[in-house]
Image (cartoon, rainbow, N blue to C red; front, side, top):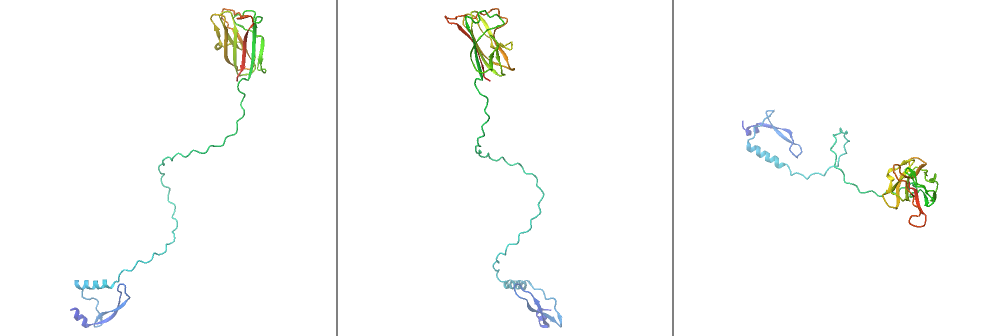
Length: 255
């Protein structure tokens, strides 16, 4: 049956059809003898294109974009994730600037006095003193007292001298003798080998100087013709003139 024949024999019944961008409106379906025509003949290609173009034409142009809506509320904070692996060590930072100079600290306690702590000069004048020769293993006499201070360095007898304090002493001596010979310092009866001085010929003085350290209080110091030497020493009287010449033993405590 052709589409025209169906149109003549069908009555119209209102139905609701929704069109794009338009309100709902009523259309009619055709009824054949009170029966609804459920199927209409299929459209051919030309009819389909024609109706599609019409539908597209009915859609108006796209409107402008609406305004941006308000920002939504901040969501809840999520749970703390598990601890990740430790990262690699970073590079060393640059050296910082030097800090300010600190305040000067308080003065320290006063230290012990420096220089000479004690001194004494013992001497002999020839003639009269040391009239006899000084045999080997015998001490030279210095029976007279020169300048001194305190009681740290004192005389025991003509040839022995007391060093009261433990410390370091500078000891110097000079003696005129006629013979070739030697002299040595002793401490508490022991020869101090590093202090030996002497002369081979002539009539010049024997002169010595050394540092002596004591380890006990009241140590005894002497100047001796060393044991084992064969010559007794004559202390020269009136050496070089008419005045009595001197022999000296000078002791200074320096520490």
